Length: 111
Image (cartoon, rainbow, N blue to C red; front, side, top):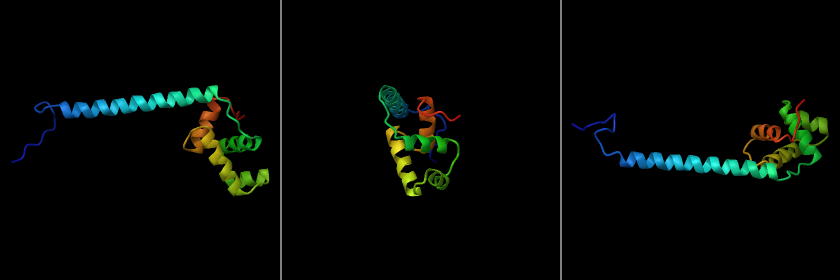
């Protein structure tokens, strides 16, 4: 019969500890990279166009791409292009993250 351990007390814990240390070091490195990115953004002048600011504010207010394109007189594909540019300039992965970061950095005012 094969032994199945629920606890590692009876086994050598070296392998498990190595995994924990590796995961912890990756977590610390990622947090540090995020802090550096944020500090770079604060010190860097993020150059949004007027249209990108308007789009970002409208997205923050819950407008959909089609509504934004109609309001601004541009094509929906142009709105998508600006959304991509906004996320790249803010070094984020989604427009929701961009809204949060832009608000924290006082780049937009949603009122």
